Picture: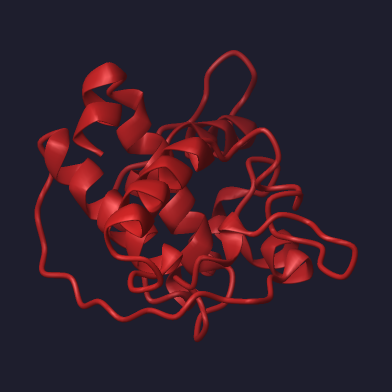
Length: 170
């Protein structure tokens, strides 16, 4: 992760966003690596859900880390744990907080295209539905601002006039 962030600091945000979208889809099943699954004949993955298309990046970083981990200890560390650790390490590498991480997540063998479309916030939604989605997940408005970034600005801008967007005070 350190090499990826040193080569481009924006990679940290890409990985945090990937982890956010992985965890947000299913409140009791999230953080399972399902966002990493590609579409197959029998599975429509979360990557192609509307909130993820052209939004999620950094899959190749996780693939690279997974390949390195697998070469050292095959079949031991889940993709879900790798994504979670990479998101935490990305945060630390750009000056954010560190936290203790519990490991042992199991990789999902399924994904939910439908839940990704309904549960993930999108810029076209108003600010109140986005806040509601975060509160439902047990997250605060401050968490929403940290995780939504530019998408939040777009939603707030829609509330105001085109000449003068309203400011969100938290």
